[in-house]
Image 1 (cartoon, rainbow, N blue to C red):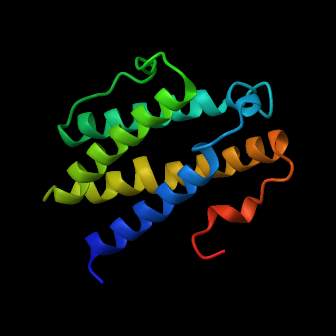
Image 2 (tube, rainbow, N blue to C red):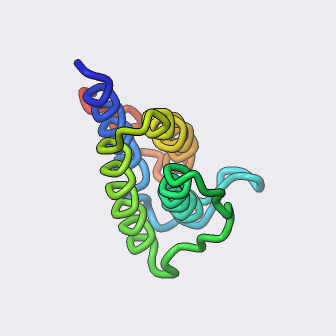
Length: 141
């Protein structure tokens, strides 16, 4: 397995977990954080979309203005769809780039970072949908 094949597998797995947690988040969980300091599901998907925009700036060697992206301003489904579109664009850029920093960015901005938010999302999901199976995030569960 090549580096890019491994990265693609990890990106796909993480994307599966994001979809399993946030894709059909119950309405009650979309705007209610687990703690006062925590992100809501809506804020998380907007933040993840912003991270995808940051990848583009990173690959161009530009500084990114964190906190400047406010999402599309639509429903939760609109925000989640925007994130998925931006994610696929970022993945394509990362996996087709010949620049070594793209491999690092794939790990930093997508894999490690999204898995972090999967954990937060699982807590949100269990809080607002107690019968939801947290092991459903795994492809082979």
